[in-house]
Amino acid sequence: MPDANSLDDHRTHGAAADRSDDTPSSVRSNTLGAYTRNLLRGPGRVRIALAAGLVCCLGLTAVAQTRDEAAADAARIDAAAAPIERAEPDAASRDHDRSAKDPKASPVAPSTAAADPDVRPAPTKKPKPKPTVVAPVAGLDRAQMRNAQAIVRTGQKMDMPRRALVIAVATAMQESTLYNYASGVLPESQNYPHQAIGWDHDSVGLFQQRPSSGWGEVGELMDPAFATRQFLSALAQVPGWQQMRLTDAAQAVQVSAFPEHYAQHEWRAAEVVDAVLDAGR
Image 1 (cartoon, helix red, strand yellow):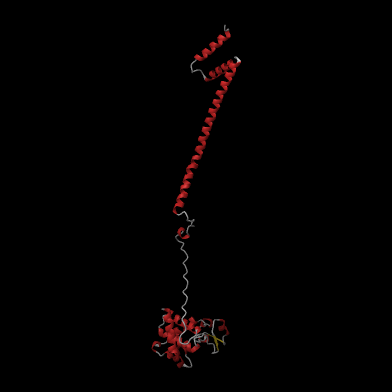
Image 2 (cartoon, one colour):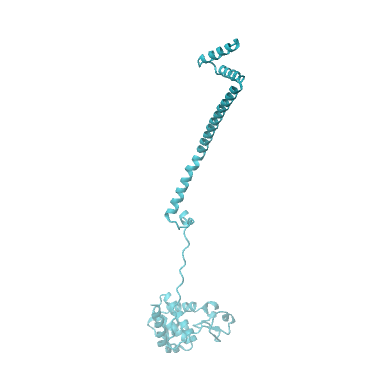
């Protein structure tokens, strides 16, 4: 026969089961705790079963919470990694664009001219053409032929006609035999390239021009090109030199003690001039 306490407990449990869900959660929690404690006071098997069930419930609750937390963490990691994942394909596509143009091409530094339109590249210096070496003619040796060639080339640059070139070469043949003379009277002249030394006062060079007479400085007159310019410039000042005999035209410039001696070199001078002109064509 159940005792009064047992009946009261059954009524209490029944009443608790018949209550509606609007009972406050705090009250339900307290009632569930009291109910659990009462069951634990029961027989040993009941207590074991209840304890096992309670552990299972707590374990399921912990697993659910852990799973929810793991899902939340994964969502946060995905959200943080998303910008990186989006950036990486972009970087890869840029690399692909660069390599697609020319996989073997190496980086090229930007040109200064391209960066600044006002900067112009330095002009490329063209190598100077080597002078043509003319073989000696008319019995001349190589040194004489080089000097004759210097006379003809200088006259061409001055736009002097062939007749003037022949007069100049013939004059040098008479004055210096087409060798560049230094002077024993002027030791200074020997400091410049020369092929012979003379003693006719202070006369120097191919045309034996004298510095004391105003033809130029010693160093200048030892230069075959300068000496030729001086002679041809003086010849151009002689009225009617084009119609004169070669020896008269030369004498008008040189004022030599032997004015007729220039004539003997005319045919050889013409041959030399023609050889140089032909080599330059």
